Length: 334
Image (tube, rainbow, N blue to C red; front, side, top):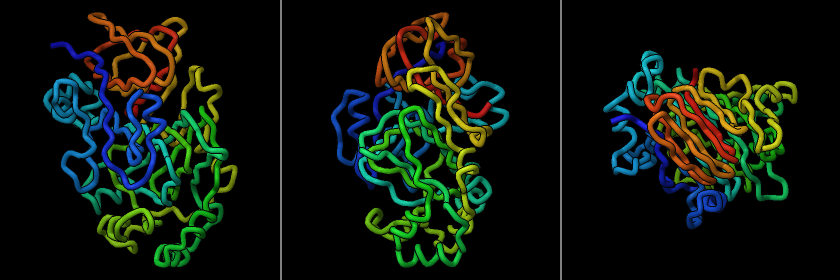
């Protein structure tokens, strides 16, 4: 049976922090106080869980199983040669109802050594909405920090010092931020993003108190002395920080979205057909952020509208997006 684009239901595994009103507004569902993340087209489960976080297709199958059953159809030969049957991508809608804790993620080498994973967790944020008076994200230390100082902050759970040491970056819809593995960061309350990341759930949480039940959940069982080895303690001044941040213009215009450090990890662009846009064959995750239109192959057309999330198999072939619609397209690396 030919593969076609599939509209997915919401997939909001329980989280430790508040949020989700913006997701409910976008998708038209009921808001949940602790539903701040919608894992879209996810073949990745939450840390220490077998199935939480995985996406189900409308026919009841796990997307992960469908991809494994037909990896060539879902991913294409070039992707298989590089990544095997992994989609190499996790996409989330993330609505921060409160500030997230200061944390960081392992790189590929560290993840192989300590988590038996081919992937670490570089990620990127595409800001699609804000609801606070001063929407802010925090990324990278403003000045180089000594490892001893950082260890003291973590030991004492000195959250004010951790946060004060980070760059506070004001954001608006249309802004994007790449977060390389190892970079300390947090998202402020009232910031709603489409998040792309490598397909893992490895978060090393320096600021665990008041967020997590125990320090073990902060260091994922490897100890903070080990976890902090992958933390980037170098200083990120304004010039260096500008290599991660892009201002892509009005959020209803077509644009390539991510700064160069995302290359090799994932791709994202904002599609605004005028009147149509042709999409080359690729595994992709689409988030419809405004308007309505259609996604058509040679065989069928799928209507799409604001709030839809769509998984596109490689085997769907060349597609044509049409209508008065704005879509964020997320793809694995080229």
